[in-house]
Length: 314
Length: 270
Image 1 (cartoon, each protein chain N blue to C red):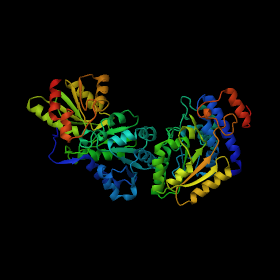
Image 2: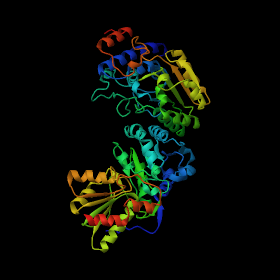
Image 3: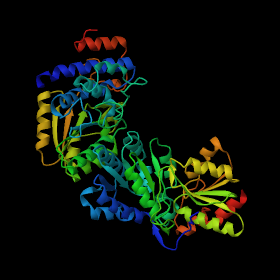
Image 4: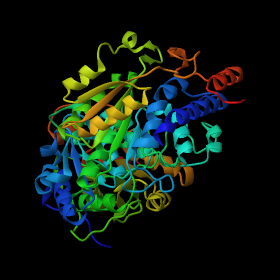
């Protein structure tokens, strides 16, 4: 089996997102991008510079942005709308639900600055509910890329697959995990490491510490499998149920609330067909706060050591 | 077709009353106030093909005040998008005519709406798409006056002007009433046209039940150098005397006897 481990090179998924948009701008004429006064942070400014006619600055008006994206989609476009995860999915929730998902439009809500690793801006800007919000909406697809290559693939899949998508990306530079030829699919996770003691299922920026935890456990003789839940909706049922059946339990790790996110998705699935213990590591129903990302990950129990400990507790 | 607009609108009003009466739920007041504008759009103004509802070059219409769906459905059926017999299925299980417009279910419905405040943004997106494609089709969007209390409308009103979407015409069905009463008592005071002008729009105020005034306003809108909103002064419940100007007919259905009385007034045999 191919070996996956965090590389020393780092890049924020938002940077890879901006690059991917520019790349697709040349290939896909229907692609349009909207932003709500955060294009320098979400990195859609790269697309704006390359394709100014197909970039729409919407001002600080997320609800209008998502509604306009719906209209562009009705007019035949593939519309990517970007903001911080909390404003995209929270402020404009009902626009996403009624104007986009209900008519199953080709709008891709591509949000950055998800989770507590937003850091210094504090709880108001740290979305810990976005996966839960988007999961609950029919027709919605959710992809959470763990690194640059996964982000490029998420953009490709969102462009090539009709219907509404939520792409969740981060602010912080995080280690690259995948080679540039790695392919992803909607509804498919990635089995990154084999092992039958337990399974760690992580998404986004938590995939790297999950791999590091597995390595440390292996050195102690505990072999755990690691799954990157790249596609949270639809979830890779086969991969998750196999983890449930073949190991003594699952540890889910996400920088999201422990309610309704990836942990919820995994627990809901396994209870129906292959029950096992599922430990959910997340913000444990607390809001975030200001601080440096590593400080916050430590405070909320989302470090490599926390994952190791959770596995051992199974 | 112009000389028949009044007759078509009369038939549409009959459908509206009958549909809502049969469904025992729905919004007659705002459907009847919007009927003449919708009739004008679908029978005279818009470039559409009922045989080909997804024709890419068609003009688009967004019913931002989605609760006026019965009037839209009746106009679409009269125009030939689907059989008028289907109208009596409004709001019933399995029907293509949902309580509020669903563009995946109903032929001729261009956008799903119902939650107020979202239609102008959708219309802006459509107008941007037409412009990007270099196509000449126009987008029309009908808003309610109470709906203007939604903040998103004003975000969108800035967008229309910022991108100078003169290929869009907005209409406000200004019937002065919303569920809880007079719009000025509920919240929205003063001139609607003045508000839009402050946002940079060209405005036209007309009697929304006068077809020649409606025609002139839409023609004028196409000539303006900036986006135009037509503030159409209308009567809630127009055409059914006991419903006119009564806020309580916003969202309640007439009983069987009331349907009969309304249909008699609208010149229909029962």
